[in-house]
Image (cartoon, rainbow, N blue to C red; front, side, top):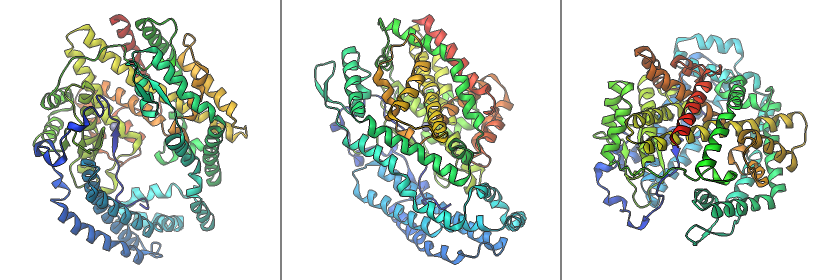
Length: 620
Ligand SMILES: [Zn+2]
């Protein structure tokens, strides 16, 4: 409600593998075999049908006006408005999904760019027209609203209303709310300044790669250069990259400090206990979940130190630096999976999820054509899953048979899609779309199952080591590193709340202490690495990254529970997939068998990490 109407939720994944290789030889969209593309007919049979529906949808927008000022009159009137809004959103989602997917097929196709633009424009007009709904509901006196909610007309909307009602204590007077709403764009300044500086203004110069070729250093090439087998290349890229951040450290510190101050201001203005509490409020997540994560990860850091030592040894280095932590320590497996083989191995690995899951997914990946398989000219890079209530849960891939990682990507996106599939069939429109807090559970759960399947089938120590290392990296990057980020966000917000100045020195001191703790006593930390605290885009929209860590922890704990359990454990997990957002995320996970308010799931994930590191120590 009152967000951009028809806006898409999607779960993206950056491109991995042989990015952009031989782009010239890619086929144009029209030349791709239909069997290799998705069939969007579950949304609209063709563009003409879309146009007809779009006209109908657009004409509904003025009808929002007839409910304005009347929501407090009766339960019946409120229900009529919510029903209208729900139907409007449902059609908007269908229209928006079609336009978005068509655009993704070929981003150079201006007809679909226009289609997407028209839908988005109408969507934001509608959001404007509907923006009175929430405040009007919040203005209904408590007792009256409770009576309304007990009425049978409002039964389907009871949960949605409860969710709005939760905000009542943090909602200000009309005049104050108006002032806050007027600040929205201003409040985004720190984020925009960072983006402009980081994405547009920064110039990092040229560096030589391991072949001696001159490469322009940029955010994208920086990460590629950190994977270089030549240490000189990695080291030069690292220092040259951070020199630019050093040269702008005062601007960056002021920008980050403003971002933190904004969070603190809004939390205070609305009466939340802290910026952290305000950020956790929408998901109804207690601070203990966030804080447990930090405590548990910190306790297990010595396992990570062991991994770094192993890496140092394997790379034959005297001392290990940050720029030595990305380069692959194991050669790629020489394993090819055709599309069909990839589908088969993914489905085999997901057998523990039962026949129905497997049958639906097999159909989706074959005859029902959910997935757009291969790269073509102009196609959006990477991969995503995009579910909607009325259509199939589509998957975009840029599948390459020689990249094992793409098989994992398929398992991952299939996890999102099956989550959408089950939720859309089990919940009404209003409660089918899962929230970010649980979004990465079903996807990474599937990656766990695939990894275990491939490990069981591994034919050599080299293959095993490669797979184990892949899992180690996933936990290292998603649970441990994101927890360090989450800890940084918490500390700097608490400092701001205590009135301590967030200076360029303060930021770097805090970050330096975290680096020392998370990388361990044997690790050589270059002073420039402290500048990393200025370059993480998420820090300018704080308190988000912890969800990556809790998501993978939950997925690991749940996959162990399902694999080690029986029918009950499986049913619990399937109910989670069917749950959409019909309950708060922690309750959905609790029903599935993991209680994120206790340390157990994070411990289970870190136990797995320790086991994998020990195995790698033996194998290498
Ligand atoms: Zn994902």
